[in-house]
Length: 185
Image 1 (cartoon, rainbow, N blue to C red):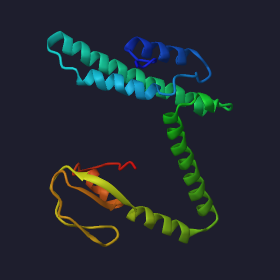
Image 2 (cartoon, helix red, strand yellow; image 1 turned 90 degrees about the horizontal axis):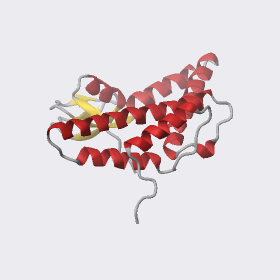
Image 3 (cartoon, rainbow, N blue to C red; image 1 turned 45 degrees about the vertical axis):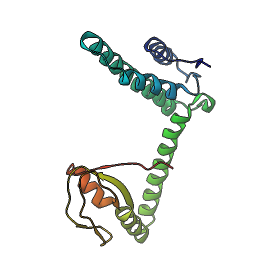
Image 4 (tube, rainbow, N blue to C red; image 1 turned 135 degrees about the vertical axis):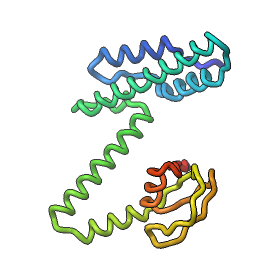
């Protein structure tokens, strides 16, 4: 059975144009981002030479820019709207909104603890965050380190994956010695 809502560069452009021209969030196919991901992924897999390769690269760049524009337009509408039509939001957009809500809650938590004199809570929060474990992949060899939790980690080889305290992970990422990775359940 063929996919009824196949995406190509013209339909993507049309969707972005419609979204930009309307004040409300439009209802689009619930699988839109997944279908779009397949479209771009299939483009990237194709191998061409010469002019065809340049055309393919331009299509990928155009699709990437249009995708970014669409997400930004829809999220801006959400942030400015008092009457959000949640039924028109795609699951991926709801995922983004969930993280924004968590950020607002964290801001309120810090503000409340600060203005209510809960310094011990703030100290505990800071320590827990510094030692929160993060999964990283090493881009370079790294000697043994002492973590923010005072545990020893390493040594590590290029491409090793490890779970280490946040503070140490950030330092290694800043030095381009590692990159953060996500483990999805």
